[in-house]
Image 1 (tube, rainbow, N blue to C red):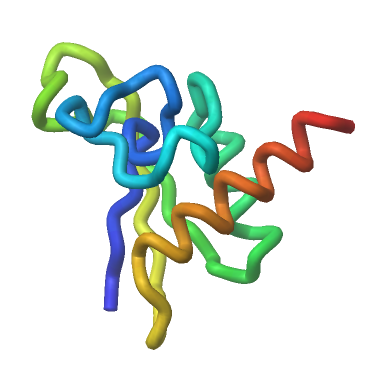
Image 2: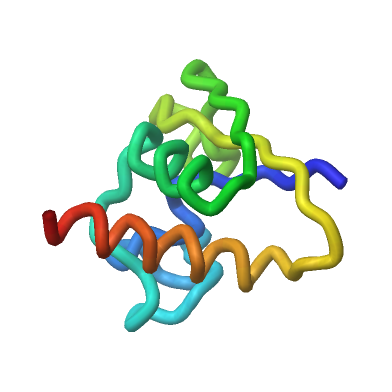
Length: 92
């Protein structure tokens, strides 16, 4: 099953109504598409990056999106795992 991940899903500076899908404690501030892709690769998810796409709620802002294939794992679990991976990458 293909899953789309927008940066807004894990952005702690966004509210739930602006598109954040995980808790603020699990989210990170201003995630970049390259960070999300790197974290997804680190988790073995083989992401496809689409730089020219815009999150529908903020159609004027080309944030891009990531498409991954997932099996039997919830989208929320993947988002939290990616966010935690980015946190560990940023600490380096």
